[in-house]
Length: 479
Image 1 (cartoon, rainbow, N blue to C red):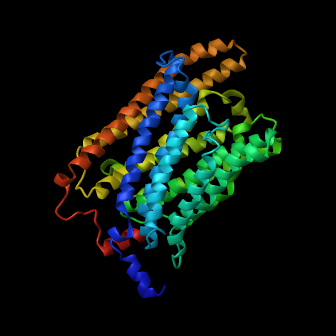
Image 2 (image 1 turned 30 degrees about the horizontal axis):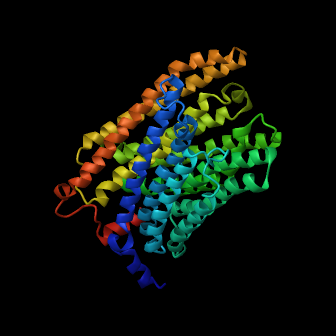
Image 3 (image 1 turned 90 degrees about the horizontal axis):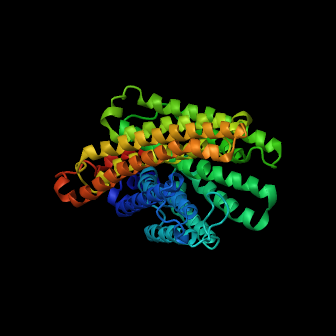
């Protein structure tokens, strides 16, 4: 491609470059799955406080609905949101559309079939005995093929980029390469090729690499794109952004075995996982410094800009969860918190408090632009969404962390198991209440999206500020 052709590609109108309709569909489906997954989690929590309404009904077994909760968040909510955001970001950063719009729509439909088939499979008792890999065996090859098609669709425009690439694309390239490998490792090796404690080690790597090599690189890549645009200033340090990228690539793949400390897995692997987990916190610190350096001089945005608020609270939670992880993966902490609700609180903070918050920020930024409106139907509902989600998440985190410590010390004292159940009951009630607050907050947002969509004609400005001119788009590409 010559220079004139490259310049022409960079000034394509958004309608030519980005299929905004598919972005809108992906985000809408993501929200739908999130509500379903949250309600499944609420249902699951009721069994802990003796309020489960479907006792004795096999298809409503609490264990099965836990899978609906976790798989719905991972593959319904997060994956659909990421696919929609990628459809928006990759063409803008590369100046080229995705490989095939027809393929994009095929992936959209096929992915929903995979998610729904997973739900049906786990509810009918076909789940696999692998954490985060409960998808029925007959879905795994189809899901892997889908991940390869996603990689092809987005890598095609990326490889056409001439010259230096912005760090967001570095993260995306890594995710497109790592994710199919991680999925294949976790869903084929333990089932068909490796057994015993070696399979446990592979399962541990899969559990953590699914977060670290799929969710994390896409999540951070999106932050490197949306934060500078929302703040209208460049990222503070491009050098630190590369330190964060290479630190993630080097240390995160080694973390997974910290899920199986004090197991028959060789101790040198357990020690390696502990050291690399602590190292990841140092890497994360450089990333957090970079983003808060970017915020310098624009701190008012935390008050006036709702997407920025979601982004930065998510970053604080990310730092917190990695700091917590650096401590609780040590053998000293594991003696107390192993198998306790401390781990459950940690998982909720990272999956919803971090990536869920970032996705909420991206949706808050994109929906008005996709609907061509001058704003939201009820901006106050977005505030309710933020505060109910944020307070609910904080309460749930500290509640489960406290419950975990109490459970651990009771077990360490060799007290009867029933004592730990009795002591945990108040904390489980608080968890249900805080989870309900989060759901209510999310319903405020869903209602706001629906009403904004319905009133789009009334809210639309005469000249939409969300339909950038080529010059504005070029600025957005290289911010």
